[in-house]
Picture 1: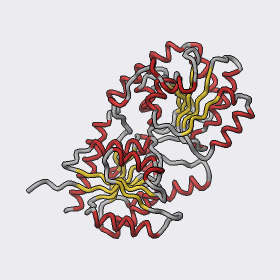
Picture 2 (picture 1 turned 45 degrees about the vertical axis):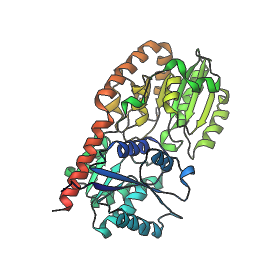
Picture 3 (picture 1 turned 30 degrees about the vertical axis):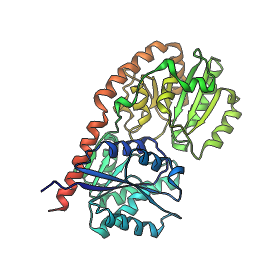
Picture 4 (picture 1 turned 180 degrees about the vertical axis):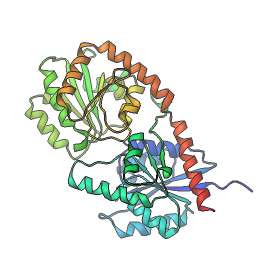
Length: 379
């Protein structure tokens, strides 16, 4: 009798192929489909063509389920998920964020299915974020298994009263062969007509308060006063874009700052930039730091979340405390004065990522969690 193929319904509330999005889709694409099928469920009122996450899933040949959500906590979403569960004979529901955690919990319990959630990180920069985080951590107690992307996150959940034995640390990881270093052929630099003698210092990520691109811009102001051959690049989209553009104008550096918007050619961008700054005040396991080091790009990052598992201070990167503008200014000036040293550290970081953050290993760990859930559910 052939071995049963596990059917997983993966639920996520985001239209972007960001760090978590790439991780989810890569795992779904790479997992052994003779043993496991991951169906991609995404909340959206848009078509596949307008939804980058669903569009990428379709390109990968994955089964994509568009779950229409017309308002916050739409009751029809529960009915849609239940229908998908029945139609595709789903064995396990896997959720990834606040909304999907709630919908998934309701549906898993009503359908008597095991439920696993991956916690990619929490945003607590205002009262609403803190409330959502508190509710999320409370509800996670009722999930059967929980995956976290860093050791720090596991400790946070344990402090919230969640049993240690149902928390699995599966670090974020990369498909190593997808990242090819070709510094001399950056289309991105050519597109923007930026000469090779100018250094590009980049901030990459969602434009939202927790990423603290405002500190990045303030540090840029400091550097521009000392060195004119610098370009500051902000890659991403989000609710803070207008405020950040206004801040660049207010600081008098708008001619030195490029807002690229959302990009799907990140490997080419890494090939065209010289330094990545992560100025966040919260992270899970930052994919941007992983990608930067894998591409041999030096990193200055805040010591938050699982960042220190990737970058060790003055070994393969530079770590600073969050919300410390002076520390960032000092680190940037030190980079400008000793570029060769930072490039050498980045190559050490590249080897560290290759050895410790390979997506193949992550996929195997993920499947073992699914197997455990299925076995426990069949007892």
